[in-house]
Amino acid sequence: MTSGFLEDASFNQSPDFGDADLFNDDKPLREAAVRYGLDLKALAACGKDYGSAETLDLGRVANENPPKLRTADGKGNRIDFVEFHPAYHALMAKSIGWGIHSSAHDGSEPASPMTSRAVRLYLATQAESGHLCPVTMTHACIGALEAEPALLAKWRPKILSRQYDPLPLPWWEKSGLTLGMGMTERQGGTDVRANITQAMAVGDHVEISGHKWFMSAPMCDAFLVLAQGDGGLTCYLMPRYRPDGSQNGLRFQRLKDKLGNKSNASSEVEFHAAYAERVGPEGAGVRTIIEMVNLTRLDCAIASAGQMRFGLSQALNHIRNRSVFQRRLIDQPAMRAVVADMALELEAQVALVFRLAHAVDKNEAAYTRLLTPAVKYLVCKSTPQVVYESLECLGGNGYTEDLPMARLYREAPLNAIWEGSGNVMALDVLRVAGRQREATMETVTALARAASQAFDVQPLVSALERTLKSRDAERRARFLCEGLARIAALAALAETNSPFASLYGETRFAGGRFAQFGTNDLGSAEVALLDRAFAA
Image (cartoon, rainbow, N blue to C red):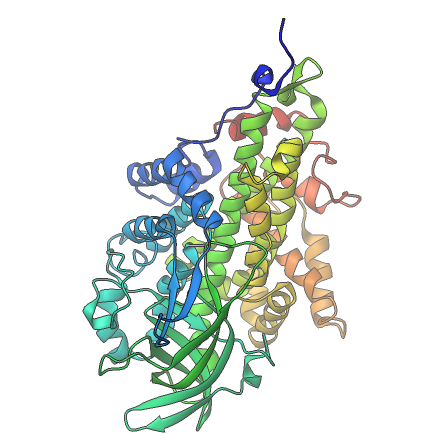
């Protein structure tokens, strides 16, 4: 006879999630890696590393101990130093070591470098997302710096180094670098052309005075920033230290108190005659930095897909091991319907994000330019719903800070906001379609042809075409964006001969679909979807 105390109720508990093989246990991911000819052994090692209990706990600790801004030392000397917990530094060293910042550019993977790196990012974000902000920006900065070859040649070796060096030193004294980005200002936000920060020419460089309202990862060694030069809005590279080794004129005002993403510092900063060098032509700041932004947008989609997978894995781990009303949760039809429906969504979105990454590898310019904002829109905006449904599978425990789902839920909305929110993505799709109409229609036709192997999408394609030509195009921009992304997701499934392609079409395109997971009738495919998902 038990006393009925808490300790007596240790039975019927799901085990802690840890020491998981995040790569091999994820069948849609592994099949994508096989499809694109990636190094399966290396990716499996990466998946085990990020799925280890030790690494997962680093993520917890880094978020429970957020960074602190030290504007001055004890004597009042300005230092503008952001102090991070050792767990954050350990995660940074791990991701830098896996080359998530560099492998797409350093020639180490000549076959499909962007796709292989995308797999590692997808795995890393399951352990912890915040530290990947500077890792992503360091990776993406190459796209912008290519507009200034001499500057890139000078910085490139240390940018691509796989040694993480957190010391606050001039960049030329360090073994490895990270780079950040500062675009938005308090008065303009997304409208960067309204920026008021000024760049004044001084010999072979400029000195920038002004501010940025959001500048994440302030301990990076340099930042790509936008400022108004003599010829208009221009992109500049601003290092933390001036060429003489003195501290540059960056004055951090405070760190943002964010909903989630606690491990990563996001700052408000003023520039006081800060030294910087021009990147790209004068007045072409947006055109220059957009090459960086397109890569970070792709990363937002990849990371969000990884977050959804981690949420689904948490749900699966629980429902396989928890019994309610004398039956395991996974044996209960209503629960199976919910989880299978989420698994179906992941099948499509994983296929889609890696199809997009592979398109970058293959230089499919029309596809990547049109689909990058659309894919970011769909995948990132799907993540909060999938994560929430996964959280609900754990019941009240999922809502507590003792388990990772609460942190994941706070993280889930972020990628849909960063690098352009939903409306910005939808309008970008509209802008591309307007400027590159012929290439856009060729891309849409090819997508529709592939998708139609699984489900007739022509009614939707016709509706998209009518809307695009109408006066309501801007008002219906989200319809255009999501419709395009859904067709691309179905096409990605069909191109891989997925057994779930037709089912995805029927449940996502046919009329009368409800909004919540578990309301779709998946029929016999439910078993196959769960079998694949249960590999974890």
